[in-house]
Length: 77
Image 1 (cartoon, helix red, strand yellow):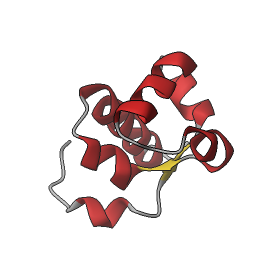
Image 2: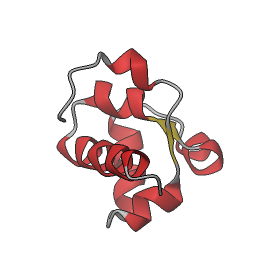
Image 3: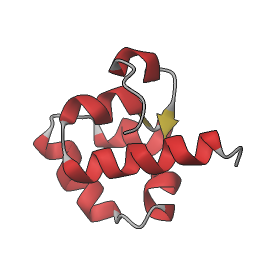
Image 4: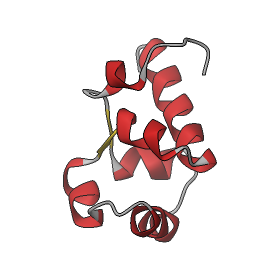
């Protein structure tokens, strides 16, 4: 990621399952990710997951999603 803000600066930015799918990731992969990181998958489906949680996971696919979400926000989508 370009800027070096600490992850806590991203706690209010949420990534939805719709975002995940739009960025080319699948639901089953998201379920596996949630299981690996002890995250509540039902909550992820219902309300999304914070960018901060994704960054803290240090998972390469999660970081790719964060990058896509931040680019989207910065381009005013």
